[in-house]
Image (cartoon, helix red, strand yellow):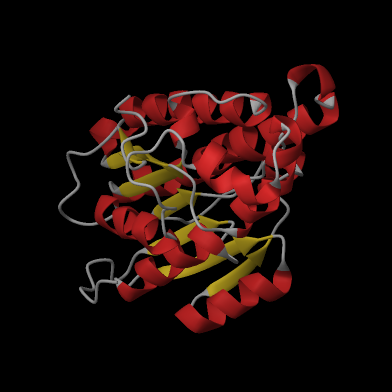
Length: 251
């Protein structure tokens, strides 16, 4: 983690900030001097990370997108990280689950970007980082909702970058492979069931099969890239998708 305080005076909002990638991003941005708003539906988790980083907790359920329609955010940095996963074949996929994934991972990021841009435009500076996935670039079986949502997030990212370029706002995606988080741990049983294999086989035969580097990504590795993309050396980085996938997309 860097100790260079390049983000003094900046206010950052990190969704899903109570654990995993979000918590790592909150720590990274705080170490760089930003005041971090830890957004999470889990009040205790958000409060714990906020206390650790000297920031503040924002308890919010981003699945309730109608409540975000008139939101205004004073955010210099927005990290859209919150997400869920549902693993099922298409013919067995509950339509309600499909819609829920789109609300949380497409509608909510759009509404948060929409709420943040007026403040960023007024200051002539802003950094938006969308935590996408290698599944924003490629597909895997049994993840129709997640792959659809991440592909949509990639499109939102590009439009945001084009609209914000002349007003000092950048927007980028980070595309990791499987990250060592509770989200990944929770899907092992679902993956085993969908593929008809034992749970202990999932890591080798499903999660890491497409990667050349055979390990999970660490949350801190993703956070380090978020730190760079929000820092002073990344002004020309916009509209891009930064893979951190152990060579998956190289195939």
